[in-house]
Amino acid sequence: MTDPSGPRAEPVTLVGGWPAERALLSAHLVVERPRFRLDVALTAGPGEVVALLGPNGAGKTTALRALAGLLPLHGGRLRLGEVLLDDPAADVYVPPERRRVGVVFQDHLLFPHLSALENVAFGPRSRGAGRRAARVEAQRWLERFGLAEYAARRPRQLSGGQAQRVALARALAVHPDLLLLDEPLAALDARTRMETRARLHHDLRAHEGATLLITHDPLDALVLADRLVIIEDGRIVQEGDAATVTARPRTEYVARLVGLNLYRGRAAGHDVTLDGGFTMIADDEVHGEAFLAFPPAAVALYPQRPAGSPRNTWAATVVGVLPHGDHLRVELGGPIQAAAEITPAAAASLGLLPGSEVWAAVKASETRAYPY
Ligand SMILES: Nc1ncnc2c1ncn2[C@@H]1O[C@H](COP(=O)(O)OP(=O)(O)OP(=O)(O)O)[C@@H](O)[C@H]1O
Image (cartoon, rainbow, N blue to C red; front, side):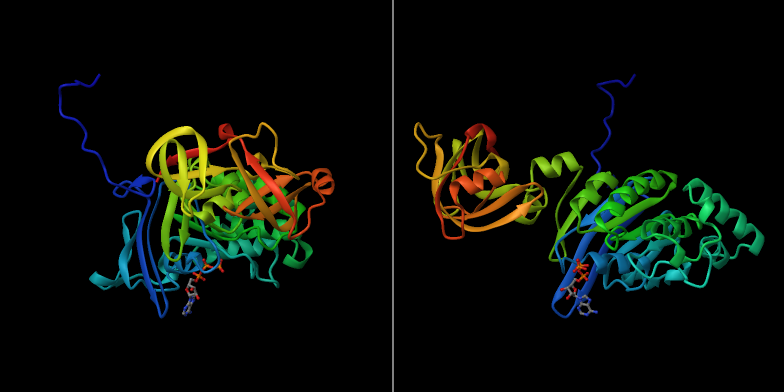
């Protein structure tokens, strides 16, 4: 037992999810472009899968290229295990082929003229393994992934999902310390994507190194990753496990990603006055700068002002109506911009069209407020 009066552990500075000195990957990536600057700190531990999410142009590919060594850093430093890979201040730059990094790109996956087995064996061969040893290793990976029966097939005889997993086996066959997955499911159709996602989740457990997954798709991130890092305009705007990020989004992009309406405002107890002046009532009690969020499914729409109305009620104009799964997503203008999710039957009975005037209401009990 520890002595409570004894010396206490110093709090460690967390860079990402792991204390920088214990992480397998410890990176501060600074890349300058003419009109863009990437400046992010990333860490990942052994066996950890970190998803890097962000809108178009956020800098995800730039980060991946810097980690792989395809793009030298302009500032910061990159360490993998005990090895310093890039540190411009110390004039250190290890080229891609000498990094213990495996990359799986979304397309250009496999060599078309080689069989699945030869494709996977290429990994160990390129790291100096003998022909026979490389084939044995490749066979082991195909078996592990349940792909042994496809060993002799050429890539064009494989489905998209199978090819994707052979590419993963090839990357893992060299036992990289860092695995980089670039939109690994983006090229697949919806059904294959679902199956491959589930298998990939399983396959990734065989990897003892760190994994960084780049994706646009929140579902990929939520299923595959232990931790999410969200970047916008070259900077990290939020990171944490899925539960934290989805419960408390901190930017509009993150809110949309998890499907919430999100606003900033000032709270005084349960009342939150949003930027723009509209006041809403939340279940939570907060004081000062605050976020207010509610899911589109919590927004009820009425043709007239609802009687005995819930307090969060406002007159809105329909801006657009889009299919969303088996529901419809209604974009509303008015004192606040909001999205509502309703059934097609409800939309038909309201006669919703762009320009329609409706009343919107959200119960305070479905509205979350939290400090900014
Ligand atoms: N070779 C380049 N020269 C100059 N600017 C570049 C270059 N490559 C990328 N950029 C710029 O860097 C920024 C980040 O691009 P990046 O491709 O990393 O974003 P991303 O998050 O991967 O986007 P997407 O999801 O669209 O692939 C963008 O503003 C882009 O225009």
